[in-house]
Image (cartoon, rainbow, N blue to C red; front, side):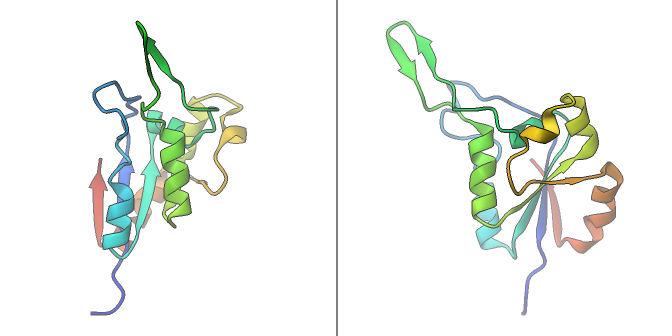
Length: 131
């Protein structure tokens, strides 16, 4: 069948996670999609662009005498995607909305694109998914 075309996965909503989600976040399934398809590109738009920023270490949450250190940490998930060979794109407008220093805090390997560029790329993908 030859080489498969890549899939585009778009994430627009930023969800910080909660006790219920623990180790998983919206990006949790992307490495498997990448491995099982011809490869994935992930586009982060709007508030989800913040997932690609270096925010320091994963926070912990103290509830009474219990410490939760298994909460999702989106920058760690993005770093894992990059290490797996997933292309991670962030839209310029979403990055600008996070402040003038946001671009300086982008994780290494994340690519910035203009918003119009994303729609222009759609025909080159086998599938486009919104997570």
